[in-house]
Image 1 (cartoon, helix red, strand yellow):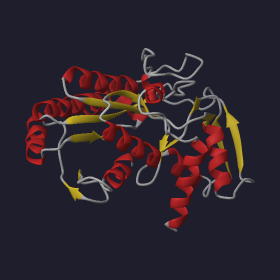
Image 2: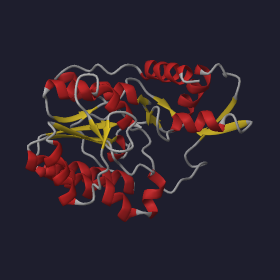
Image 3: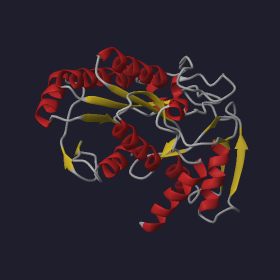
Length: 279
């Protein structure tokens, strides 16, 4: 999902070599679990920057598939970061708000201590740590509540379910910020262009709940009258614990190249416009 938009955005000004799932550009299948294969691929391609959007993101499945979660979210990242160091490339690794426990009570910045509650969050934190240990030049970009074209996400799930069911119940006591992949891809391009390596939060501005996001999605389709009921996390139990409030502040961006991420409602407008254009 994010990878599709990164290929599109970076392809405007750069030559992009993409993995096979990317919709445009050259393609190259690559097993990130094979360290030697990763290094060989990078030696052949001679990239300046490797953007890693690959992840095991099925949060609940991670609880019962711990080995698979760590294999993709940590071991594969370690292999890629190591190979980047060996060939002199920078790595741009995508991480998540789920590295935080959600108990701070206000937005998390890059200097807050991670404390993940789920296997998914812990495996993603392990991936961050692998990048930090690697010795490669790096960007780590934490995103949250990501949605966009070309992959499974909350927005598409809700819009699809609302056409099949007479009403929906959606959690209203988890706070975050829906962030559109197009905005993240643009921010990735800006950071790469700047050469300012480091750890960054790349979230849209503002905050809402999953219930609030659902209402906004339906309103954007002109379906404000569709019946949605708020519920609590306790009423909708899931295998993996979720942060109660994982809103991110893009403080490192503010202090370096400037925070150009828009309000989340603006990202939703862009998402719906592209969605309607494809109909």
